[in-house]
Image 1 (cartoon, rainbow, N blue to C red):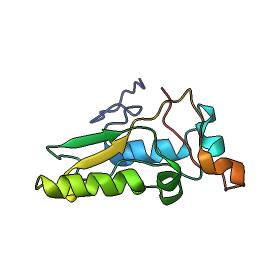
Image 2: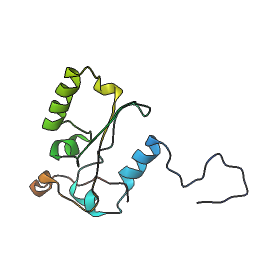
Image 3: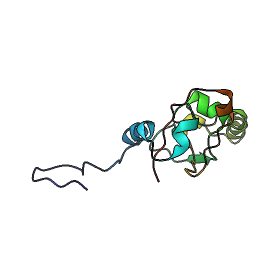
Image 4: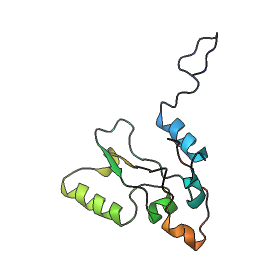
Length: 120
């Protein structure tokens, strides 16, 4: 926490909105995940969504696209949501990231490595 004599509306160290979190994630090198990935795969959708969908660690296609659920799992998710009448653009979609794992299938093929993650 940063303290100051000048009035502040919020502490300088709080990351309390998605834009700040996204920026922090893009710069983070606190764990080794950034070394074997191409970019940050952050969530997408309205920040005030009534529905939040959380998938497993981003896969190869998500890592390359920088978006959650764009590979085969994304196609399955889209079909399932359509079948039950939910517009995906009205949900916040993201992935859980295990910072103790650095498995990225395409990393072995020599893909560029620029991804950063939020520290635990």
